[in-house]
Image 1: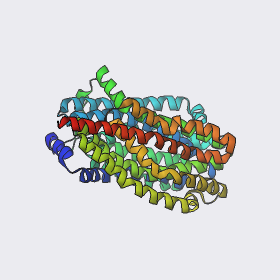
Image 2: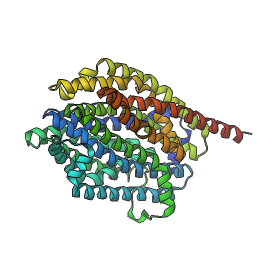
Image 3: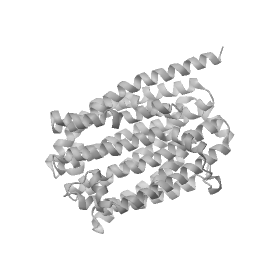
Image 4: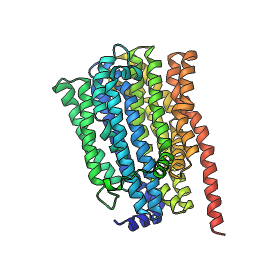
Length: 452
């Protein structure tokens, strides 16, 4: 498919059909990614509670890696989709190279500083004395893989913004299958414990990285070429504006998880393990919604760049209508089967099951509202409403969550920890809905003015 054919495909295909076609591979990619993250939690949970807690601790590091991967991927990808919508392929090519090589470099910085300060870093993430040895073992492997993990995330997002989500799915799929196969081999057969789970993760992530890099040279996508790497203040500014919301959102996930781990640590390793399990389960369910949104974003960026505002509005409401009911069903299932779900990861510890099940049930009450939170954030980011997108991105894990996790436990104890995230999600929805209506109204007015 040539660049011109891709432009016509993105701007002329009926919106519901286009979003669904782009969303299916991204939904599969997101589910697979979170599934093999859950595989670590599942297999490590067979060792002991402290090992399970270590996986929850290192979730903060994974969020840091994702923060930079998504920042460079979203920052470059948003720009690329708009420029491809404007038929400016050369500018899109330069931004593609800048995003990729920058993500590789920042991943290397994470590796160097993380390994130099391994134990203080583990403490910062929330490791207790009993969890610390397991957390260090897991951390050191994940840190080694940080450079190509950030670059792989960047490549996956860039492919998606070019309307080539299938290629991104291929890279993720092979890595996921390999990870699930290697987990029990390294953990139990080679008796590597929690470190084996981390080694399996970075090997599979490297395979994904190589496949994604190969895919960037296929299907009319913009190939990653060193000669296109021409850093400039203008391009960095564009990347910052497009990627800042993702950086803020993912960085705050890391900070919020650290604070959550420290707060839960007061109630023992079981509380840390339980909240870590709930985070992974919720992330798995939420990944389907995010995957659908990743099908929406390139449609939004392409058509906004082409000034087809009616298609952007149609795409937004199609996504809201399509996902809200689905999330209601997931929430009902999650509420009634919460103990059984948590039990799959740590059935040997009744405290983990009790704490985790109640936290998951609280989360289910507000889960359907996540459709408004996610699609509003993605739309604002794709159309370069940087300030609004950044505020909304910071809302869930920062503006609302951090006060909740600091205040509610003082009043309600452990229940306050379990209620902190649902409270933040509800408040975020109350912010997202008026922001979405405001922006969509502006597009409707611009569309009406263009037809006068």
